[in-house]
Image (tube, rainbow, N blue to C red):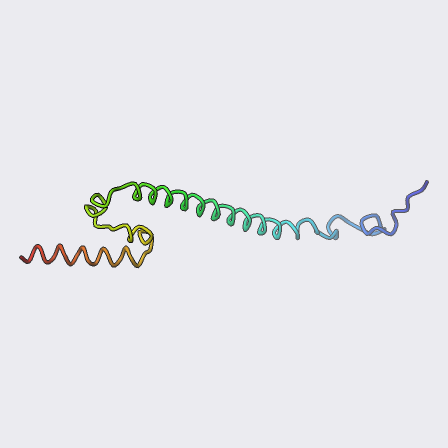
Length: 106
C-alpha cells in the first residue's frame, strides 16, 4: 500500500514552515475566549448558588424567631420575604434615619 502525500499542502514542493497556515494558532484565541466565558459563567453560577444558600439560611433563622423577637429588630413575619429586596432595605433605612433624627430633635 502506497500513501500519496503530494496533494497535502504541507508536503507539496516549495512549502516552507513560514508559509504554513496557522489553523491551530487562529483557533486558540477563540478557544481561549470560549473557555474564559465558560469559566466566568461557571464562577457566576457558583456565586449565585452560594448567595441563594446564604439567603436561605438567613430566612430560616429569621423564621425561627418569635413574633416578639422579630418586633425587637423591627420586622414582622410579612417582612421576611422582603428582607433581601433592595427597595425594602432602602425604605427601612430611610425610616430608621427619620426616627433617629426625630428623637434627637425632641
